[in-house]
Image 1 (cartoon, helix red, strand yellow):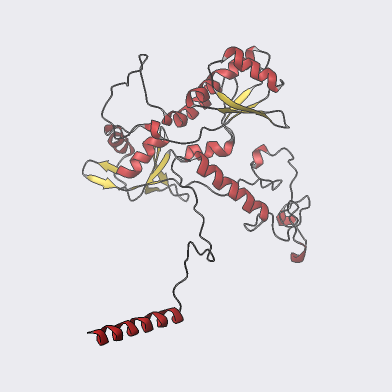
Image 2: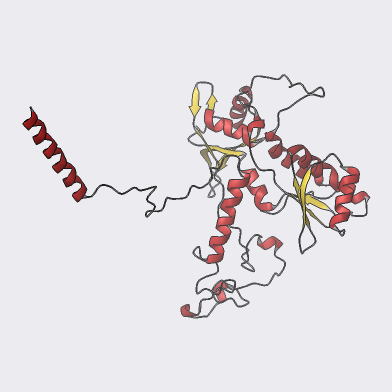
Length: 340
């Protein structure tokens, strides 16, 4: 997924609003006096209980040192809490906010501050992979919804119970653009979506079960250079690499023999798109770690106990031990009979 548009001073509002929808799930709404706002009854519980990790922010397009960036933050946003600043080899910065309020202020205000201090090309955004995770956990699907039920009836049913819904769309078949019985619903944040998953869709006297959108665990791979973590639209090389032999042509034009298959990245004898490639497996593991870290609904993967672990699998009594136990019981019974 490409980065969200509007990362500059003029176009940053749309990106900021999209990210605010996701990040604000961790905080309750309060008025200026700190009192909770009174509104319509809602099924959604207190979102402050969410323990989702705060996403890092990337700052690109700047030509300043880490110390200069630190001093700008200290001068203009001294109440913002940041626990680390990292500088990459490419010259971009990664900021790690300590709380959601600091995250939102950096996203909404720091681009303007940078532009006012000679960094007009500055842009702030969430990494694409993390953004994709955040976007996915706001989506739910409802299947087997009667075709005669219009989208607006579904929206009314959701808002009636206090759910904050952004969009309701009935999916169409690719061939013929024919409507299906599956509804895609996008919510303001993961907290609203998770509540909906538990309650389901209730339209008057009709009830439909809901399911969460599945996180895409497949790594993003460019079909031009065959590298990971970017798509062809943002490929910097623009040099076509063959997935079969590694030369500069499309795989449809490759004349190499099957025994000449080679992936340039890992030097393995397989296609560059193979799912058993060590590079693919490494990227897949990285994706799973990101999902576990930044998704509020994922459960950490548990490790399988080792078969030879005596604590997990204690040994059963063997036949000799059982025979000895029976013999001891027989002798004890004979002694009791003699004494009585």
